[in-house]
Each structure stands twice: as C-alpha cells, then as structure tokens.
Length: 303
Image 1 (cartoon, one colour):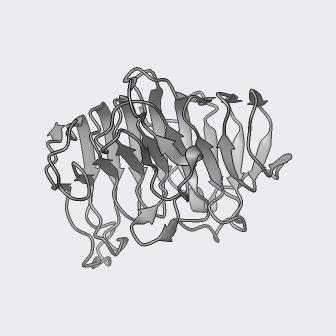
Image 2 (cartoon, one colour):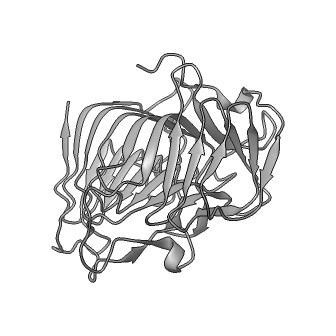
C-alpha cells in the first residue's frame, strides 16, 4: 500500500518553481488547482468556517525564511487535501535538493471541537502562540463527530519546528479532531519534531508512514481515543531529540493526571523498523524506545 505515492528520498527530489505565493490567512472558501505550486510564506490560518480545497498533484513549498510557515486549520474550518495514488499532494521545504532539513517549515495543524481532558474543555495547540485561533475543544457540547476535513494521499516533508523547548509543531498535529475527519495514506518524513501527534480528539486514521523523524513517530496526549490501523515507522538511531525519541509515545497529559477522557488510543497492524540504518551507525543515546506508554496513558498496540 506504500507503492507509487510515497517518497523515500525527499532530500534529492526536484520540485517545480512556485506559481503562486500565499502571504496571509484564508478567510473564505479557496481552491488550489492541479498544476499549481504554492509557496507558503505565512503562518496561514484557515478561518471563519472556510474550506481550503487542494486538488491532486499540488505541491506546497513551506518558506524557510518565514519562521513556522504552515497550514493551521481553526475550529469550524476545513482542509480538503485529497490526492490520489498517482498524484499525491506534497507539502515540503522550499529549499534546494541537498539543503533541506527538519524544521524548514511549520507543518499542518488541525484544530477541532471533539473531547479532550483539559479542565474547562479548551486548550491551545502546542507550538503556536496562544490566541483564539489556536484553540481546540469547546467549553461545553463537545462534538466527537466534528469534521476538520479530509487528507488522503498526502506527503509532509521537513516540517515541524521548535519555537521553544517542549513547544513544537509537528508534521501533522491534530488537536481535538473529531471522527468526522478523514485521515488516510499520509507520509510524514524527516520532521523537526514528531511525525504525527494527537492532542485529545476521536479521529481515526489509517495507512500512516513516519520516516526518519527527529522525535516520536506516533505521539498521543490529552485524552485521544481514536483508532489507527496500518502504519509504518522507519527510524535512524543517529537521529534523536533532546527529550528522547520513541516509536510510540503516549501520555494522559503532561502531569500524568487521572483527568478524563483518558488517553486510550488503539493502534493495530503497525510496523516499526530500526534501530540502525546501517552497520556504521552506532546510534544516539537519546534514541530510546519502540513504545513509551507513560503518565497514566492506557494506549493499546496490536500487531
């Protein structure tokens, strides 16, 4: 199922020159059409219950000179990025082949209205300044069927940036995302933090690929209760974050509280490949565990 749409050597992949530059937020329904190459030179928030639709084959280049440039979908808005197996949608660095690195741009963040275990029901997504635009969850009436859009046959490369220690964006970050959202056939490669991280929410996902991530491959927090099936994590033991890097990392919350809903994700049919890329790679002491289930989490992994 990884055939055709994945890319195992994005460092040397040649992408076309931009045809359009985005320098601000999206506040009304917008479409990026097949054939376009978008230069993303903004922390671009999808706002006002608007929908950004990205057609198959579009390439989005995150501008390294714009700190944290990314696509951030606020509560009530949607990102529809449905590629195909032969025309995936690619989000990657705007740097030339050979010069790309994790953290070149800020990644994709979805924020929804599903349950999380933050007291009061509302939290702000990690990695962005606190504001109404970075909230996920609701004070009352959480919607576990909330729909933040659809991502299908999508590659995310060299994303995720640490604005400060323990406050980072990831390749794909999901905060309070509901199970009305579709997440399938996503590859997150060479990210500057986690490949995939869930903060609360109920969204299900399938066919996820994490490739040479700096920190964790699959990270669950704050009451995430979705189900993830069919996934691959490929790691290099020389690559590790100061916090320690794991295939799976799961917490109920940072304090290890008993707040509910408890983190209770289920992962099935997952494969982690490591620890060494080759016989000359002696590894990094911060390269840690296949699975670190801690801080009152009750996550479950099934083979």
